[in-house]
Image (cartoon, rainbow, N blue to C red):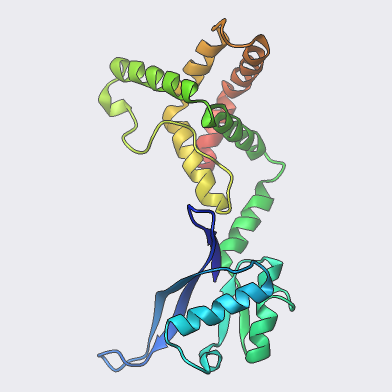
Length: 236
């Protein structure tokens, strides 16, 4: 069980099932992993999650007594899922034998996040955030960046240019810690030269506020340190 928010900002719960299939053609019991259902949440508390689970079971035609077929459930470590008064408690009231499994992928990401705290990666993470914020709400800066990249394409052999993804910095923060960081590092390593070239041009632009030019000069001074880009490649 995991939660998500769709493009309409509506909370939804996604269900995947791992089950034993005793009806395969080879007459052996197989373990299957299947997408089960997506259901909207009436509320994000324990009662709302429990009602969502029941509606998912009814929608998929599991009928009465579906809880007798369950041996466990997995989710992230949010209290609303794993606390005794949360979804876990509601399900175990129906089926006391049910085991709760804290999603291994979530736990690994949390462990990695804790391991990188207060290390050199903090400087890299700050750079990823600052770069993203510089371009996030500035169509003008994005157009200027595209101009810099077009000039680079005319100067460099095609084989030296990145062939995948876009060129704007992407968000490095999100619920999927590893995926967001890797995607942001991908983009940074591909277009690092273009970003620095654009920032240098902004520091020489008299139309940019003096305080902003000084701030950008500070970024450039730190980000041109070879240890930082080598660190990006290492963590990537």
